[in-house]
Length: 45
Image (cartoon, rainbow, N blue to C red; front, top):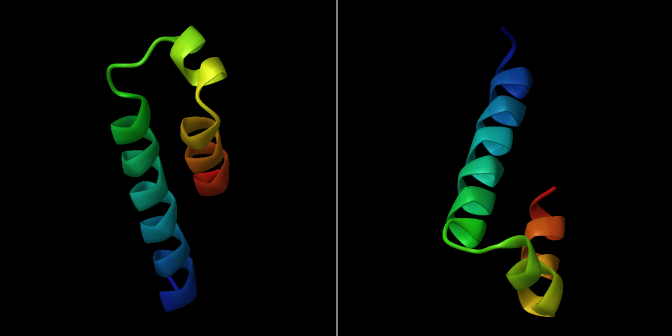
């Protein structure tokens, strides 16, 4: 694979790990009620 493809894949994996960490013990209502949490998750997407 080209280096740029590998870099993009690495970035995707890292973003997914962070999203999982952000929402790890949260419920959907927590997500909806927390603007900071929503912003962080949306930013990583």
